[in-house]
Image 1 (cartoon, one colour):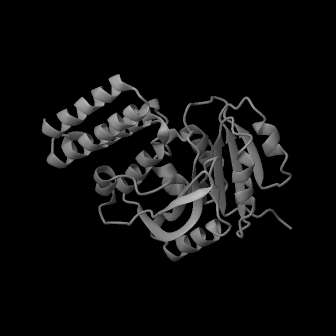
Image 2 (cartoon, one colour):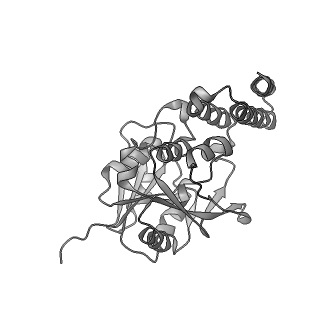
Length: 279
């Protein structure tokens, strides 16, 4: 019997998460859709990550070491995209999980919607092993780029299955340090700008697990997100809607710094918020 290429490549980027990584891996292995390859891309771990991955004697799993470790998951995901043998790509963070029918339903929806470059489903937000809420992604609108820039990110990487050729056509994820932690948000904006369509489903097929160590808990994450949006706004920066958007982003950054008792930075970004609103 000849080799059958997988239909989808699953990419888990990880760094020093050997203790919790098995939960993510096993949620992939428990999928009812079996035609996948799983790349665990190690972003410079110093713990037992490699041993944990190689303890799974499943030919679909491949351990990959990023030779030039970074502080973000952008390059590990790009490595997985480049090495993929499948036409579809799915991302999973090392502290999140998928429900068993995630791949089956997502691929069925992509088959039903050949015009879509990616499928994005809802996810459950879980904190301390308790479901806090259901996060519904989307909806699609005709000017998706404008919505993403001015209304916010309505996709999560762990909820997406995307066509590999679409990801490659926009250059994959941006690895610049200034976009660290919001690389996926930037990617959706660039895909929408390129004319790619997204399809959303309301069924929750994964869990985003709030551990307190998530990158979005870092107050500087909110600053990088604000600057990424500022970059995409470009020449529209002095319009009323742009000023309102930037004011909201800087205000949120200020709140995050206050939460971490970083008073100097909190005051600075509160000032930026006021300046953006009334400039």
